[in-house]
Image (cartoon, rainbow, N blue to C red; front, top):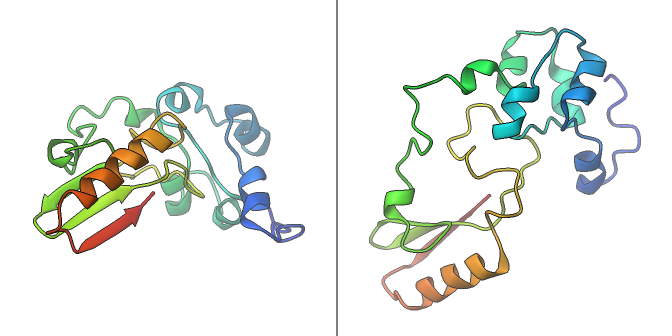
Length: 152
């Protein structure tokens, strides 16, 4: 991955060149088996992040590459921050009186294995024109909201 910058002139090219399948990752690391994990939690590792991995198991690897233990972690709830309990409409968290967190995209440049929203990333079903409209309607209906944090 030394030449990751070659031809990487836009964020679209970087995303298009990212590793998203088990086959792509196995071409680089033959002993790696992530298929079962990425069926539940998608994988995207962009070329830059791949270039930082020195060897399987190093700290960058652990942040980027799916691990079977993600599926067996009974102690970690799907929604570790309890955002769904504070969501009056989909993808909007209203935990504090004057501010909301508004998820406007479920696509990231890389899907971190420690993400607290991994249940929502990597799918176009999570965020839609409808859910964005619902969020905007909610914000308009609550004049006490003075701070909207866009996320995703």
